[in-house]
Image (tube, rainbow, N blue to C red; front, side, top):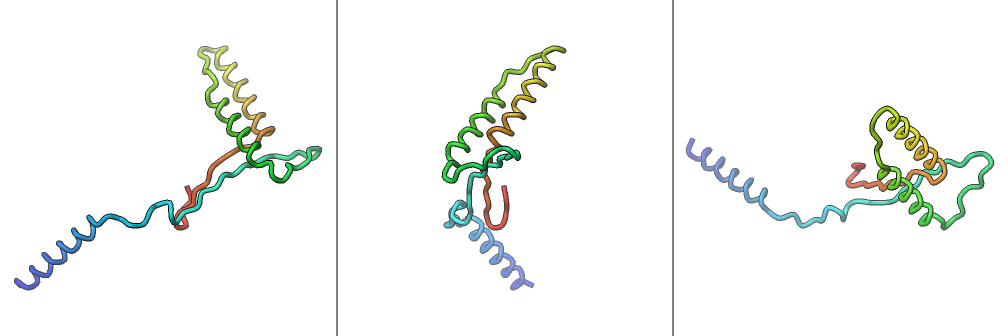
Length: 110
């Protein structure tokens, strides 16, 4: 019985030592990050030119930031103005697109 107790104590010490070891693998070393831009092209529009991703992505990010920083109005007529601002920002999505940054790490998406 005493040897079983010694084995449990050694196993506990080993578990503690393993748990406090510093991690040597960086979190970003096994993952992928990329920017994505979803644009809606209507029938009469021409598709985007190759190589225009950078300026298009920045325009979509600027449009999203300006929509998020729009002032909020209060009261009954303020709610109507907020709804109009939301409709304008929804229309800007059709013009500039939706920008996002995707992350993958060991098969997990974030």
